[in-house]
Image (cartoon, rainbow, N blue to C red; front, side, top):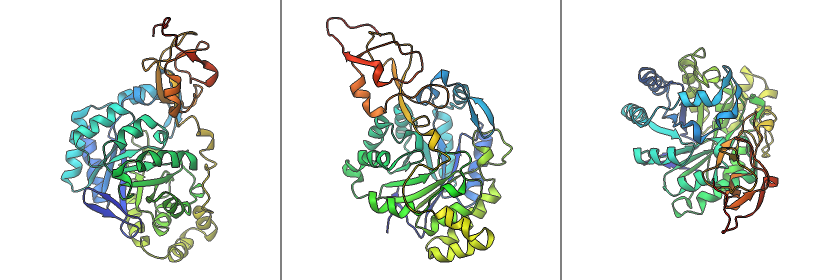
Amino acid sequence: MSILSIHGRKYGAGSPLIVAEVGTGHNGDRVKAAELIAAAVDSGAGCVKFQHVYADEIIHPLTGVVPLPGGPVALYDRFRALETGLDFLSFLKDETERRGALFLCTPFGKRSARELRDLGVVAMKVASPELNHEPLLDELSSYGLPVILSSGVSTLADIERAVGLFSARPAYQDGVSLALLHCVTAYPAPERDYNLRILPVLSTLLGMAPGVSDHSMDPVLVPALAAAVGAVVIEKHLCLSRDDPGLDDPIALPPGQFAAMVRAVQDAAGRPLEETALTLSRDYTPELVEAVLGNGRKRLASSEADNYGRTNRSLHARTAIRAGQAFTEGNVAILRTEKVLRPGVQPRFLPIVLGRLAARDVPDGQGIRWEDVGGPVDAQAVSPG
């Protein structure tokens, strides 16, 4: 049986870790943050998760307006507004642990990762778009802390490559410090896209604890079926009200619905799948239950396929790069592309790109493609920048 161990606590298919994803729903307000933490714990969550945001680690200022559940948003400006600083993060951690829950937080780059490490966190969470951010994964793997990886908008090859960066380190070779959350990167995600039979397949293939990060609107269907197929971690967004202004509040569960989810998960955990499927078929339909379970073959869900290569990370010009100018750590960034800019090559190719000359102009913010990359820098004639 797959086990996840975090700070002396062990979680398994019969006793999964339930994560309340608050994210940035507090909007930097300590009073609201404390209310969200209390609501999460009172609703039965064993873990409360947040996000440590620096806009420059995530997207370019020219990313543009992006459609989100609450409406169109100038995404870079919104992320800048969600930068809270370390004092606020320390407050979140203290308040969560004071209430007896596990504090979990998502970094989006090396700076935020190092600050979380220095804050003394006991585990790390990697969001789906960062599963191909290899410099970040290398950084996290060097800490030896338990890590929960989300795998939305990712292929099996992407997942295997990411997990391999951790399993190569001695701290992760027994698998008990790693969990992989199956996820559909759509907001909201259709329940029919979840293909939950993939959880035991991924667990067997990769030797780590399986789980699900659920972005669907229903409080019970996906979480209960995930527990029934052996999920060790179940994560779902929590809000005080779906009318609140947080980025994810429109798809999050208010406390009453979150508590109903927890009860459904606890009822399904450790029971035969057939019993849970039969029970849920009475409230939903047998056809819907079977559709949510799926065929167990890993694929991009139809609702997230168009996001592949754009929600994930790629190489982008941090500033305008002229033809003949060298690619350097100062002018190349690993960013999410989103909808407006063009995507670049995968982050794993950063060592190849750095130190070469631009074969043509690369506009500010745009993805760096192979046709933009020329020969190596001539040591006698390095273009500044």
